[in-house]
Length: 399
Image (cartoon, rainbow, N blue to C red; front, side):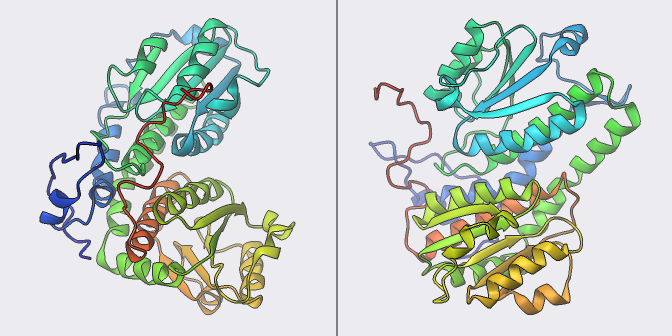
């Protein structure tokens, strides 16, 4: 399949049961809508970044927030509620917000929020993330928080969606319509807005100065070009080779460190959705505390290792060498040439150099394409995975 035709728009074709018809995609060189949406991500990130930095003062702006600096300074707790892919964006946002503000931030799966004893007072902010804005579990969590006096910020892709009527402020990711069920561009758009929001919170409560804000923004502006490098032919050749190694897998195990673990969780979800292959993600060193027993010397449980930016650290290299010694296929993703790693891995996917803020965007695009290619090799319906829909609207009573 030719990955190179990635700029033409395609029409929204759907059958009578609401499932997407890939005919329009095929006619212009795409196998499916998901691939089109993967290729839109550089533009999506640029759109999300646009007009967020006030050049006159060198500070970020979020005019959507109907909240004063004094109210922001009074916030002591932040809860992020979301489901599925959006919850992974929330996990990365948690670490960013804590770094930028020193506030306590907790991520909760929206469907479990009702069962948790959490404070919902006027010193609490709840960030609710939903691509569609109508996910019933997330709406339920928002309603509970609203009744208890929390300040609610909705992050969504759909203007006028139900979540916006319950929120105090709504921030739109402006990713345009996402037709494929597997979320791709909405995820990177969420990551962009949440990263900006974390910087903004640090700015408003006085933790970040103007120079620091501008420096962070400049780093974010470099992300679209790096994504385009992932979408280039040399990278795609490596991704397709890695997919070939995994198409007959019984399960795939992902390993990483720091925020790469969350990226691996999202990659495992994508692989499950698209290919129906079981997949799990682990912190690399935690993998030694039990899960390493899953490694199969018959090579039908490959291990995919996402290395943090820079030279691979000795501890993670040690884990991957151990995994390889037990007979597993090893696929490495790294932004740095390393002779030891090259000799250990069966396949290497070379990522463009990226810092810790940029790597979640760069790596997830490569892993989206990996999952997509595995699904194609297995003949799956990429846009319409079985049993899944674009917005999960079944409530806790099953209705």
